[in-house]
Each structure stands twice: as C-alpha cells, then as structure tokens.
Amino acid sequence: MAQETKGTMGRFIAFEGIDGSGKTTQAARLAARLNRMGLACCQTREPTAGPIGSLVHQIMTGRIAADNRVVAALYAADRLDHLLNQTDGILPLLEQGTHVLTDRYYFSSYAYHSVDMPMDWVIEANAQAAQLLRPTATIFIDVDPNTALERISKNRFHTEIYENLARLTKTRELYFQAFEKEKDRENILILDGSMTEDQLEEQVWEAVKGYF
Image: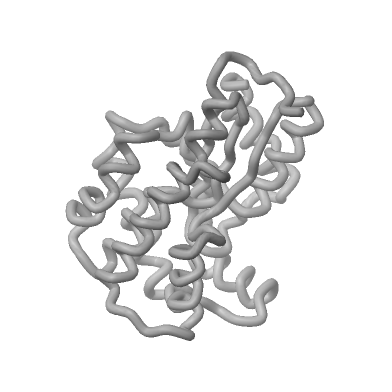
C-alpha cells in the first residue's frame, strides 16, 4: 500500500548533468533517503525501458544507426510516454501522491541535441512535455568533462556515442545556455559534482528537503 506524502501531489525532482557527473548515484541516494523517511518514492530514468526508450538505447550504443534529428524526436516521444503511460507513467504516480525522481528529463535533450541542431528547435520538440509537467526542481550536478570521462572509463564496459571529450565539453556549455534561456520558467539548482558522494548527497538534501 502506498504511503502518504506531504500534500496531495507528489514532488518531481529531475537530476541532470553530463555523463559521468554522478547524477544516477545521487538520484538513488535521495530515493533511499525518502524511503527511510517513510515517503512513497519512485526512481526512474530516461531513456526509459519502454518500447521507444529501448530503441533509443540501441541507437546510443551503436547497434542501430539514425540521424540526430530522428534521435531527438525519439527522445521527445519517449518522454511523453514516460509522462503519460497509464501503467507506470510519471503523471499518474504524482497524482497518487508518490514522489518521482528522474535521472534525466528535457534539459538533457536541450543540451545534448543542441550540439547538432538549434536549441529552439529542441525546446519546441519537447514543448508538450514541458506544458504537461515542469519539475519541482532540476538538480544539475556540474563536473569537469575530463573528470566525467575518467569516471566513465572506470565504471563502464562500453561508452555511448555522446561520450567523448569534445561533445561532453560542448554539452556542458549548452546546459548553461539552456538554463539561462529557461531561468524564468524553471527551478534550477546547480551543485558541485567534484565533492565526495557523501558530501554531495548532503548538498542535494539541503537543496530539496523543503519540498518534502
């Protein structure tokens, strides 16, 4: 049985950052903390494990080739399914009072896909998702791209197509451009990802605890 949460709607926290930033770890740590507090919480990620997300995963690992515009559109479609799916979608969970933590949301598209196409195009492609649900807070974990690549090489057996120094450097720059562009409509919290995992966990909690 779902446990009660503060208020009628769950809170929606999006973790963002370049690959290797530590966002996946911190999302898991925040989920564990909320569970220890007795709060109903669901941790999820994008691309999803659904049909569209599975296709995206195959493209990202190089098993299927696709134009970058197709990839961007698939991410947008997967995101809408992530929100609306009646089995495990984000919106139904929030309406039930469950807090949802996502590892990536539309700012990932704004940054990663704008390397190859105009950011305004990417934002417009994701406009329906933004209209349906903006995060309670977006936590951006900022790390130097060289550090990120070192972490990836230690923790992964393979890399994805966007995981190289030039692209990660440009993607980090585009994150900040997107934050500036959307600052009047979004609650963006930028944290230093160079600290230890324990230190960063406490920084994340200090940043979001007022929402729970």
